[in-house]
Image (cartoon, rainbow, N blue to C red; front, side):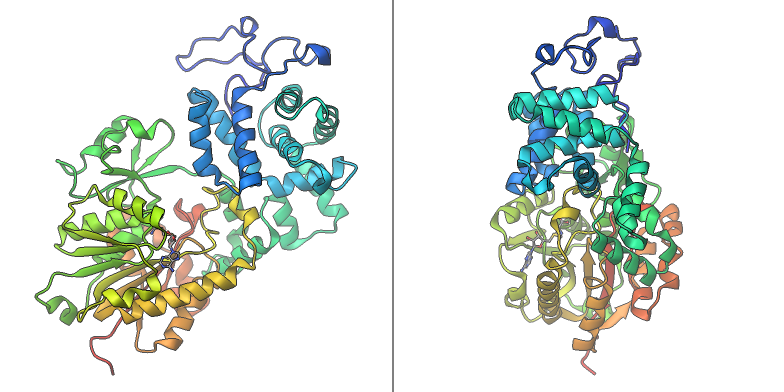
Length: 530
Ligand SMILES: C[S@@+](CC[C@H](N)C(=O)[O-])C[C@H]1O[C@@H](n2cnc3c(N)ncnc32)[C@H](O)[C@@H]1O
């Protein structure tokens, strides 16, 4: 992790966006940049917090106090503080980096504080984590990281704890991150996954789960690459919904002019590395949307997979179902693809506010194509009718361990105890979907988690409960949906997977495919019961 922002405590001359040299000596309004700042007596030190650091601190507080989600809270806070582009980028790195690294920073802080961290006031601990991130993982100069954090504490918490924060951060700054983790691993006699957990800031149970899944999918040697990828800022992926704009590809074209790179892996997709997405043409109408390429890929694979002939032979248009649709990303793409095939989509979501989001996402597609149901997916049999659904997507509620890049606090919030409730729900949703599937129909089971209990084991259990189902090779529709570079990306890994079931499923990975670690299994109901 690194930050190359210009004026957050780095006393080097930097250029502004237009390439002009900034006169740093003349700028005294930016914290950490005014000359002699760190040398000034404490009483003369600035008491006002730097807006970017204040933004990050406010989000950290919301995450630890209210269980807020940083990816939702941060944009609102950036707007509230009216941060410019550079400060917004700095605040984002501060917030996301601090949250990702929390476990490791806490281990280091524990070695520098003379009492258990749990005895510190929560805001003080958040400020220390923020300071530790700047010292250990960003290119912020030591004096600025310490002084700015102390200024933040003075202004937001009070003068009381500022001495402690100053002293602790100075101890933290005594060695670089690598030395800290080596030393702590040695002292704690950590080895294997526990040492990796400390070095790469993942809980040990998550490291073990990722190792198990990588091994099952023929990628046993790639654990460190995956852990590193989880700690990198994700690229923003865009999708242009097919067939909804006046001219096909027009929004991707203008996004490319604004700096996006059109994907060579998947049609309709692009990668955007910075900039204001809301200003891209088509976003206001929901025709151009942010969506991980992995999500786009599995949606296109389900829409394009071949149905058994009798299921198609019906005079009725195909009926598609998105069983767990909120907030509607896949539903919108599915509906756009359905419109091109004269199919209809029922998008189901039990949480009313998320069902609203689904309706909003679908509004880019002709309303004749889709309907939203606000209900529990386990009662979907009520909607199956005589015919059933021809294509069903279950994008199941899951631990989300495949999206750690995007949800920086999630890894510390999840516990292994979450698995039993989630896997039980996944099982019930799968059974309900099987009951609603038309003869010859296709069922896509998708998770944004690579945990084997939610993926391959879930599919094996399903096949035991419903031996009539056929597990298709999910790579085929994925390859068919892909562009040449995407087909290449799909090669390897799963082909050497440990079990026949795993070989037939697709497991995407951030370090291989540049997507979330999304799992995709495709099952088919036979035309007639045998
Ligand atoms: C992984 S998210 C789906 C993401 C969505 N497909 C998208 O691409 O935007 C899982 C969704 O399942 C919903 N869910 C939770 N319990 C459910 C249930 N009993 N039946 C159906 N959906 C459920 C959650 O509210 C959540 O919106």
